[in-house]
Image (cartoon, rainbow, N blue to C red; front, side, top):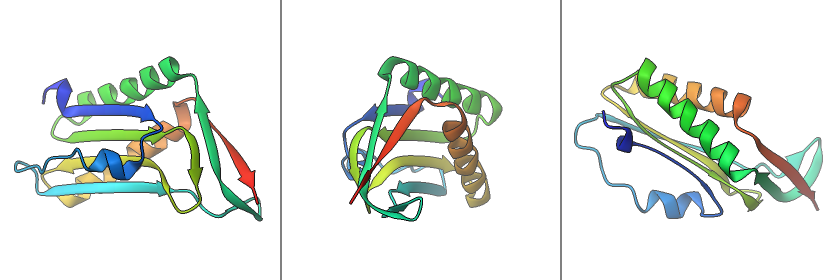
Length: 131
């Protein structure tokens, strides 16, 4: 797979807008999209959303590092990762992980691993906005 088949982005662009740019994959049977959606509560308090921030260069580099590692470890898949920054309202998606593989189980496993690594290492900070 070419590295151009693996895309990462961090911006204020919504997940829905990013998904409009996707083309269908004719080479993979599984096309899994995970949306991490902002809940309406944080620490048992009602929130209107979350304000996400990051040091753009560092966060993008770390996200690319994860994708490069996953590509090396699991070469037979495609991925697109998008994380929103700025205010994301409750009910809206803050992260998109798209994984394409030949079979569904691999897509689920890879999506779960991408999310684990992103949460563990990508420096994106969140500030809940309480109602």
